[in-house]
Image 1 (cartoon, rainbow, N blue to C red):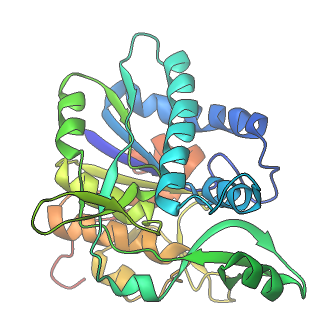
Image 2 (image 1 turned 180 degrees about the horizontal axis):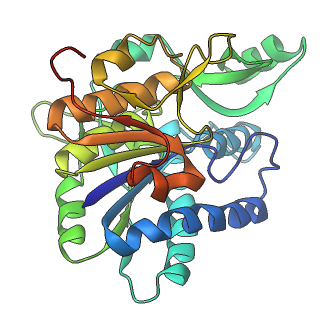
Length: 307
């Protein structure tokens, strides 16, 4: 079976972790333990988030006196793809001796006229609190939005239209290679209508929506979205909260899941299932093997009559 597994942005840096390299190196062992069993039995493509990492690099870039201007988000996204991809590749190499493993920096096509450029919603970076947040945002030229008990930077998140390197991923899979790609949703680029030339844009594409599109383009059998909760919950955080073990695209879309957290995950799962007839699932990273085998998580299946 061909599986595209999308790791949550907090797989290597969880809330409250210090953003040190050593912390991420330690956390990657947990990730690989969860995925290695799947890699033994299936073709596997791994994508990952980069919210904490790109936010850290953005802060460093803004504060660097040697720069005349901060680095743009597309280049920072490329940096995080390389860094996180290297950590994953090394750990997978150690866990799967003899297996071919490749980390590929990929580019995601977006539309220059996507309305998302005028409505930033994607959280990146650390949490801020206190009365100084508006001043900090103004000094750095950032837009911020409330995330739980604090504030975080928000950036545009245009919808993915295609992954430029899909055919390369196809070829790597055909050779038996485990592929790590589309990190952070891929480097966002627009293509010139006449020449096809690519230009980076100031945005971060949602990694789950990119993973769904990549899974569709690769004709994957299963889209596995891994996060820090056991499953999708209806009424999350309310007295009516209850786990959703089995769902269809139409039921997920009726759920009203928050745009900044579970919303993109449920939309990604719904799109993949609708467009391919395959299966998707959402659940906890540590239960990846059990999710694929139907023993954990929320399974998303095609709509049937009466659903």
